[in-house]
Image (tube, rainbow, N blue to C red; front, side):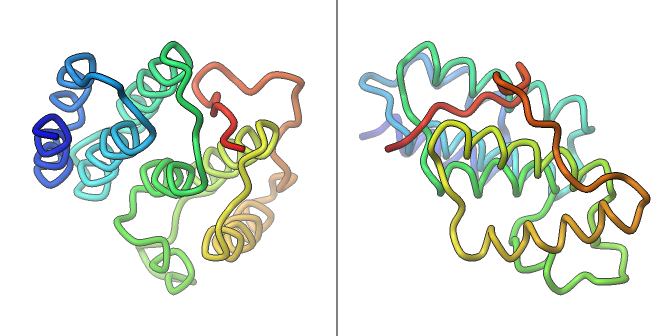
Length: 166
């Protein structure tokens, strides 16, 4: 149980690299442990302490570890992953940020939509809040002149694999 407390402390401190260092020490890792690691990434990303490449690197490391450990994602992990990609502590901000500086960029929106698509391909479906956010992201991408649909692939991209949860 103390390992979970250490991961929670990393999340609260916004220290995803430390969380990733501690993760292998956790016996019987489960989705909660991985979600806490992504939560640390989210907190750092929302505080602008990570660049886009660092966010992708950390999420990729967590996802690869999950696959290696045979841990399956769930909808709450997906929410946390999307929050990290959008750099927000609360997804409701995306719904409220129509024209202000908190609005995600088209690139962030596309990245989050691709993560959600990868999750769906693996049988993980979004929460109600995430469905509403997805519609907002779609509008952001479309208003930027992009197609608005994440590329559908047989396999999710390496930085976005999400093991299935059901």
